[in-house]
Image (cartoon, rainbow over all chains, first blue to last red; front, side, top):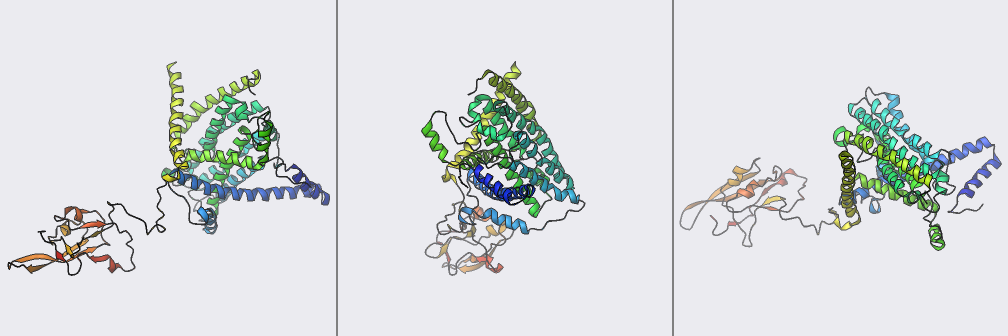
Length: 362
Length: 159
């Protein structure tokens, strides 16, 4: 077996073959699914803990503060300490709450982000399922989290939770359109919905450069709309601490609250990862056609570093939004979507279709 | 047509003002020197509080152990929550006159709200605020302080 950090396909193929050689195909498939599940679970925990720490540091620096700096070097282990605390916190039972839905809601939120994680191409060959409708699948799955939010709000038997959940519902219904339309713009350019092919097509020039003006407009709309979709500030009306205590997760405590908290950060990672894959070439290094020496240097950096680097930059952008802009009112939120993003988006898709037809992209 | 222009003008101005906001926070992010946080217990030796900070009420004494308090009791009258008790006594001056002077100026730090009325209304500027802020003690009695030092006298020329 040859192992390389530039191409994982031989490594995954070797695991597959050695499993199939010693057991029945059905059992091999089950074990492979288990391995992927465990790997994604570990990745999930690491990313979640790191992003919580990163967010606290970023927001502190933007507000002229220092952020966590006591536990470990530079406060590195603060989030781990927080997690351990949350694990020991009592799960407060809520009177007159719908018990089943109440305990189900955080799992739906987690499962929705988990499912999206499986379809993301992390590096060459490091791609759990390569669906031929990848973009469509990601859109469908990533908006499933709102079901969990609505359930949490309804089952809590609390007016704040319900208002928060309803706001979240209104928000997702509106902004899912924008996210979909902006991704459709790129699907028109790429001519495929399969994520591996979308990444492959961006070898010489990422789509944001190849699709120039409409791609940039689509990217701006995507990043704003997906910020709204993950219920993050300035669109965090569903939580709105000043009005609704904590919105839909007011009644949640302990590890159930931690699930909601973690899912918010993982969703942020997922929307940034989708944007990376679709607009910024996924794990593809920055290559320019014809510049052989430059391309060789760029190709020295492993693909997963490229992927995580680009995703990290976009996550930073989303954090930057949150710690700069004040929260929108619900009417401002809906005005922004229905009066600005949606019409601009529809025109943008048309322009992109024209550009593709006339061959004005490169 | 006018409304169309207004529409695009709105988008342009909106994006512009958002970018201004982002440049401010982004500027703070890349300039670590703008951090204001004081790492308090670590910088305890070098920490200097600013002059207008109201730590606790003190009575400044000069090097000859003299203060300016005449014992008039205006601070006691003005104190909204009775944190100050002025206990006067009388002294016979050289000319044989009886004069009211201070025996004890008692200050209850535990009751003080740091409003500053005593310092502001003192006719002879006998009281001041110190920058001391570490007030925690294990015994409540320690919060009752006598501000005039033992053996101290009224400064010459203060009536």
